[in-house]
Amino acid sequence: MKQLKDILYKSGILEITGDVTQTTTRVVFDSRAVVPGCLFVAIRGTQTDGHRFIGQAIEKGATSIVCEELPASIPEEVNFIKVKDSTAALSNIASNFYENPSQSVKVIGVTGTNGKTTIATLLYKLFSQLGYSCGLLSTIRNYVENNEIPATHTTPDALRLNELLYTMKKHGVSHCFMEVSSHAVVQQRVSGIEFAGGIFTNLTHDHLDYHKDFDEYRYAKKKFFDGLPASAFAISNADDRNGRFMLQNTRAKKYFYGIKNMADYRCRMLENRFDGLELNMDGIDTWFKLVGPFNAYNLLAVYATSMLLGENKESVLAGLSSLSPVEGRFEHFISPGGITAIVDYAHTPDALENVLKTINAVRTGNEQLITVVGAGGNRDKTKRPVMAGIACNHSNRVILTSDNPRNEEPEAILDDMKRGIPADKKKNTLVITNREEAIRTACALAQKGDIILVAGKGHEKYQEIKGVKYPFDDKKLLHEILSDHNQECNKP
Image (cartoon, rainbow, N blue to C red; front, side, top):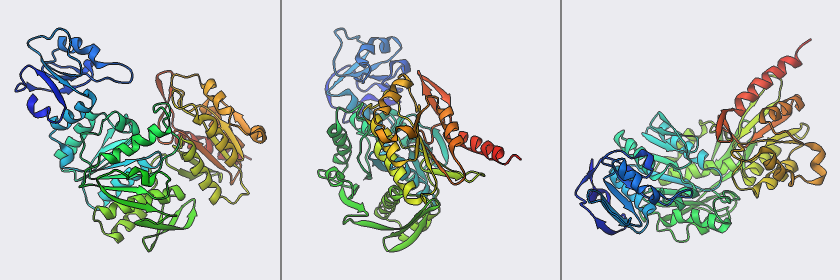
């Protein structure tokens, strides 16, 4: 239990009605989660306004309310705290309630369109290997030391985020590596967090269903760096056209990494194969298990961050060289029948193009590349034809299919994608709505030596249709089909 006056620090108070020396048992912003004696924060969300549920929260036992507008009638037994911005207030209240855990744990945030999960996960694995007690907050899953906690969002809400950091603090975690989404920045989920460092990966077409346009998306990313304290470091991709823009107004110490342009941390790509990369990293030739130029950038960002955190160069490179690809990020295997299957989370035009270019740079050219790809429902529609065009221009054959249609009709999504098929590629493109059937068809078309890329879902173990998540695992399905495929081919 905490006194109100202690957890309201930095919440932007305009007016108080009641007694702030009273204690509160819990902080909530969802009226369904209200328990007797709790503090309810009424925030204006994208779907609904929490101010509509103040009465319901009081009926369920909330004894304190934080809001932007006071109701016409104020019960004497309830404390009301009027603030300028209840969303911003929630982040600071959450941090205060959980004893400002980010002041005890070094929190490193990773933002950008692509590479966030890989960089955050590699840092978590590397620093754990180096002997630190670490935490991870990512799209795939969260970890407190070696204890896995399911992830529901790229960046948790402010309350959940601070609760996780508080758990890390109690377990003696020294470093937490977390993805920071543009949604989280705009919704001020991270405004109460004191970051020790921030990493920018790249910026490409994504989330324009949420942000009005690309500029708004770009400024959302920049806002993260604008908010870093002077005690932190900010490291950015010098080869991305927005890399320097991101750090223009940050108070943090500025650094850059890159392969093409001058930067504080650089590397050269010496070899790129399906089984890994050889890079000259800061003057030392090192073999890594990850594949492709995009992973060269990811590895360089991890290396640079490790140096800024004071680690030993040789230990970091040795540790990085032992790490395997992150789940669903260019995961590949060769079937018993000699077919290479690749599963990747690529769900943006740039990510898909990077994966396809990597495959084409490694392949001999004598095999065919079959790409299975879709686009998510209730998301940015403008990228759908672009992704179809990229798939067609970089593959021998393409099968357009469902991704997570969510509440949209799968056929309508595929109609959007079909508009991006180049005229000369139509004969090599199939449209199969059912994802399992599409993957089975790709496997049936493949011969020994061919390559199948299944893009879009990566690590996900479900397919979301009309609000229901059905079990679905691209990698597992590919293993099953290609195993059976080999048995069929070997029949006398």
